[in-house]
Figure 1 (cartoon, rainbow, N blue to C red):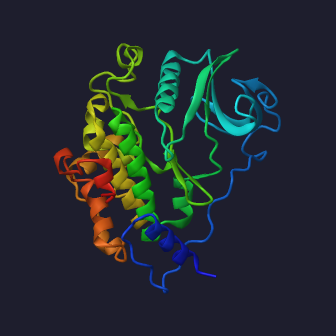
Figure 2 (figure 1 turned 120 degrees about the horizontal axis):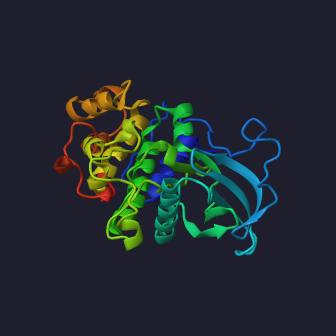
Length: 321
């Protein structure tokens, strides 16, 4: 039976990637991806949502929760019983949360691409806003990286290409993600990727009720995840374009190859200075086995590069063309 690294390389070549096979000396990472299993340590023994029907989903499992919303899985009675995920938010939540939730739902429903978590429908049911989404059985890329980074370069090449294609689809529709990071990429057991969570996205020329008056940001605001943010996003998140997403993708590629992000600091202000003024560590030393083309994709969309020096498109940013 072929070794895992040989199967991965064969798969990449089958997808049109000009990538030579790995050396037999290089061992690919072990099987890292497992379906999420909810245990008593991750959620209360009895969740009041279990067994309820919200938005046509008969909820039977809690997948997780954050500061804004909770995510469950269940049977979709409006889709022949297919298993899907549902994100719910209390209608009593602060207005800012509800604006972000509505934005994420409507942007997600406008994007139909195999590499983006699809939102099938959204609405209000009783005490909850909800959005029904694809259920991806796997782990987020941040967890995978914690176990496997630095990763073998063919895997990083696949990850970069797939995220770039997903971003390209969004950018063509005037949508900038603004929070590209490993936690927002879901990987299943077959290494299929999906880009998730457009809750911080900017929708240029979107519906007037989202584009005007209900914007998440005012001029001069900065938000996102500082370790992955472009310098211009620290100054004014509202004005950023696709180049900011390409910068974040470059940092993600750097992390996959090197096993760490290029910069660490104790505060967002210090991180902003590093991203703006300091050259990142050399990937030639940290990822010597990676081909120059892949290291170049990371460098060209990474710290120290102005918007004009970054790739002209998401596809070019990951060497897709």
